[in-house]
Structure formats: structure tokens, C-alpha cells
Image 1: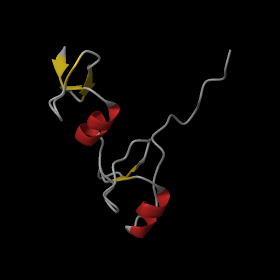
Image 2: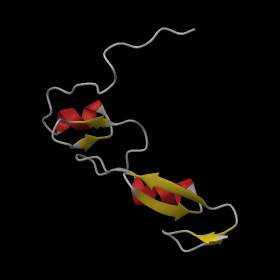
Image 3: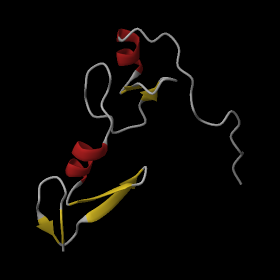
Image 4: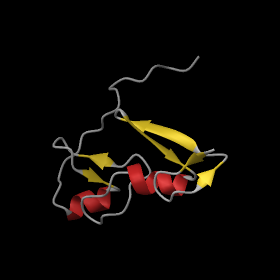
Length: 86
């Protein structure tokens, strides 16, 4: 068993998440989100979906929050072309 890095619960189904070279152990997705999910620069909620990121690294949970923060343009970071299916 391993202890959760957030709540300290010693749980037989704990799991490890590695992000940008930092690894942490959790007993639930709730604790993982609390510890590792980025915050929206406008409303401060945890971003658990894709979110939006500006060129200078500011993160937003949705287009509404980006607009409210004065962001007028965002570029999608996905590839310009997507391979066709099989």
C-alpha cells in the first residue's frame, strides 16, 4: 500500500501520476486534481479538461474566462493537419 501525498490515506489501490518530471502518489482522482491540475487565471477553478493557454503560459478553463480576462486571440496547439483514419 502507498500513502496519498495529499490526504495521507494509506490505500491498496493508490496510483502514481507523473507530470513534467514530478511524480506524486494519490488515493483518488480528487486528490490528484487538487495537487496537479492548473488553475484558471480568471476564476481560479481547477482545469480538469483541455482548457485554453495563451502564448505567455496563462491558463483558462474556458473561452468565456479568457474573454473576461481581456484575451482577444488564442491559437490552438493541435497539429495543423490531422491524419485521416484507416
